[in-house]
Length: 470
Image 1 (tube, rainbow, N blue to C red):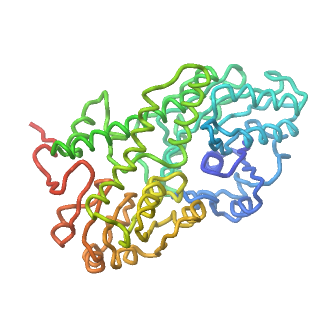
Image 2 (tube, rainbow, N blue to C red):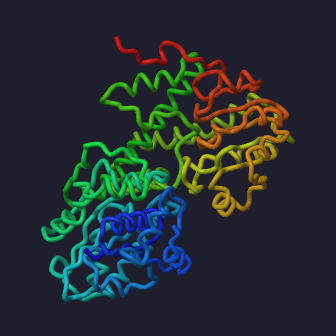
Image 3 (cartoon, one colour):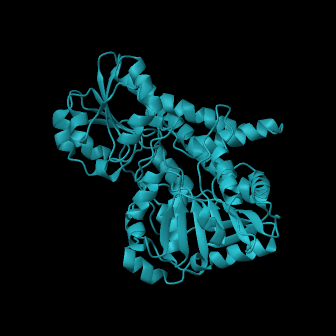
């Protein structure tokens, strides 16, 4: 098929590269000429492991990038993958969706049937909005010349290629049979995993090739639009819950790592999203929970569980900051080193991260801040220009004469650090590992006063931490 992807962010660039890999002629549209030039030079406009290699292998062959909408005339399927940032009231700003719909409408071909796919995370009813804008700008008839469907993305930043080639599920919301059939045909390559062994060998995808194929789920458009919001809100609730349990574990002397492991062994619960942290953040969960709450209030159907999860998450940010304040007493004039600015590893996304909240709390009480992140410092600095903090190119710089270290993001690079050298550089050997990620026993052996969240200051492996076969 002839595919067009509008937007070169996570959704557009990853989706475009994937379909190009599977043999479809795919064109990415972006109005930002610099991003177009990057793609055409074989480089990814975003940081995503493996995406550079994929783009450079297919650009000029089955993958192309342009800054205009003329290519829509020859498209069979057009994916809309633009941003939907939050407005001050929490609702999604659809201005980029509307602009994309206008561009599509002005270039649709009346001689062919085109499927328009909302791939971005959008509020329920957006498909109707997009359809009306396209109809107005094209003069064409919905369901005769074109149809709009919903195909929400479930891409994890840092693991986007794994998720696009080996998804758990593919959700299609369509009310038009012809559009439904075209989407089914388009996704057959991913559902059936055609040539996957060859492709994984060519591009060294380090992903598990098991026998489980993705679930291909068809439903109505509005239900598909709701599935993405409901899924992300549920995961946010799950993280908030285990973080609350961690706070209680600290009071009672229990070990939350053992508690979460024991919970995760229950197949009804599962072990994913039961890892303790300083709170969920990033570009998806805050935005999607805010939109879902705003919508529920508009229609008089408030979601108390999600509201509680949001408030609990803010409390977790504050809990981490307060833990440092209690341990180091007055922070006025003291120096705190922060390891990790992105909301998770393997991404450069520093939007709405827990780091911005926690760093502000430290700065407000007079602390000096030094930070490091393998990929996120450029974006964090651009998003938080008012923060007076020192950006360090090396974690060892962060450790130099600090009164406390705080690990916020569990980059593998931090596990692999020369911690003996880190210890030699600090002024006070206190370290708070908010992800319970590092080897605390080893750190204490070399002299660090290391602790995590919900595990106390003397975490040791016990029989409760082990699953044994009998």
